Length: 205
Image 1 (cartoon, rainbow, N blue to C red):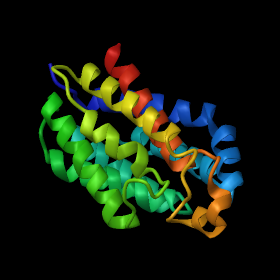
Image 2 (cartoon, helix red, strand yellow):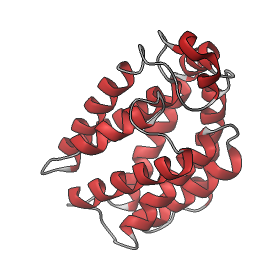
Image 3 (cartoon, rainbow, N blue to C red):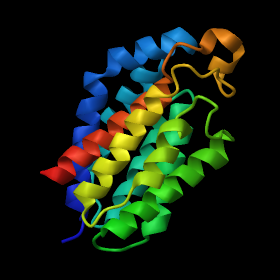
Image 4 (cartoon, rainbow, N blue to C red):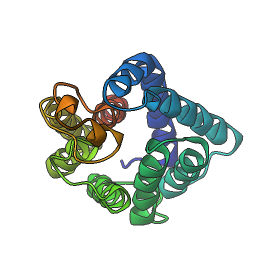
């Protein structure tokens, strides 16, 4: 059985809870190399996503993803809103109006999300951004079930986020710090890995 709109809503609720739980950690990571608002912005965005889904639960996964995208773009400041919003928007376009998403559809959605982030942020692997978590996640996203595919993606995203620590940032506000940006995990890569882990855990249930 594939991933339905309701399954996706459950995953987004888990993601929102994870963002709330790690809000302070994300703020501290961003304070070290950015402007300190990543955790606050994401938490506000996902709180708004929950309210939007409460008011109107769309009936296809693609429509759910589109609602998430428009909410994040309109409610989240900084770089996170446009980047995550574009990721969810591209994912929704990729899955179109399919009633249920099979593992191949999830892989396609993740690939489209990465394409959106790269197009929007003009970042590539090694620039110390969320791409460093999302790119390996997309490459690893394989499996016969949604749970297996998302677990593999989440594992790769966590490894990718850890790998941003020694990097010198080449994009975003962190790039202004030059060499001083090394030694800190990128907050966008960390939040990407947290979201994918939340999705994987819901799929496993």
